[in-house]
Image (cartoon, rainbow, N blue to C red):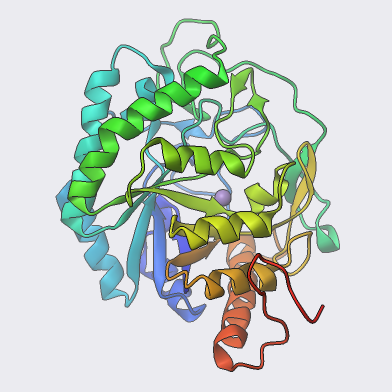
Length: 374
Ligand SMILES: [Mn+2]
């Protein structure tokens, strides 16, 4: 397993690359979507702006696709900093809103997504993370409920079912001039139909390009949010997604925290099952207390999830991909994001070192995800 760091667009600078190297990372996962309202400055905690139902920001320019030249330059910049570019995370709603919404521009937008996938392949970037979600990440609150009073996010009961306004998808504004009103609700069946069409059209291009599409589950994993269905809100739904279009290029951006928030199954079984199938393109690591709709995100070394057990399972199944910290609670200092990431990375590196150091691991999972010696 490889340890990486996720960087947002405004963080693609020598200082952030140096921070990643200093914290022990070998890989980066990069977000090219601007969640920060295209502002000149960004909050020191580097959390996407927007509140419970306020969009994160305005989507990008639909005509400015991420080109092979731009992506190649980015990969070289990252490699010049002695890191490897493991993945691009998330598609800009400007490129694919009508794929999610089954709108009139869908045919052109499918071609745009195919072009981006080809560009990634040409640039030598092996993975494209995506989140097939209409409402996106929303409905959570930030509260000082973390260890030591750290501000953290979570849910305290079901969110109000505030519908998604026209012109918004995936919690970003793609059409500021959309007529007043809200998106009609669709069924789960219809959302899966849209995903299937998307995969059937894009996965073959991904195969040809040497790129893996990697699906993030719905965060928070409620059956519906904002009167829209969620796609992957139980661990088994990942299997349904994989089986829709069997291909090495139809893979997962497995988010341990989100899966731990789900009400069914257990997170260890899910990590075991999907890593054994070789389906995890890369992994988000974070800890959590509780399950939807009552949970909060925690620091990596506390919470419900035994992270040593998670990483042991991955090691046993020869997972060779990249693991990045997901979000962390905000640490009280002038650089909450850096402090949270350094803390999480230190923990990850320690467990990795322990698993790789010798045969005398304190406990070791046997087949089936069960542990002995506990
Ligand atoms: Mn995640």
